[in-house]
Image 1 (cartoon, rainbow, N blue to C red):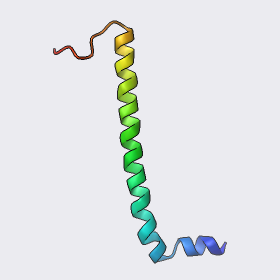
Image 2 (image 1 turned 90 degrees about the vertical axis):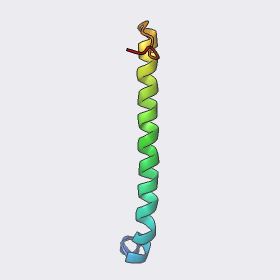
Image 3 (image 1 turned 60 degrees about the vertical axis):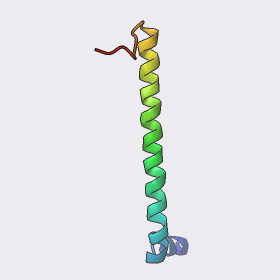
Image 4 (image 1 turned 60 degrees about the horizontal axis):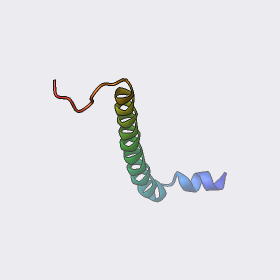
Length: 54
């Protein structure tokens, strides 16, 4: 349990929080890009041109 106390100390949190935020932002961007890609492939499989302007 000593490691948990050390993890919650202010100097450690000052370094850990920005790292977690950066990883979370990039993970979110990657997930959105993947979702967009899957939707585009589904449109192509249905015969819809995803690049067609309305």
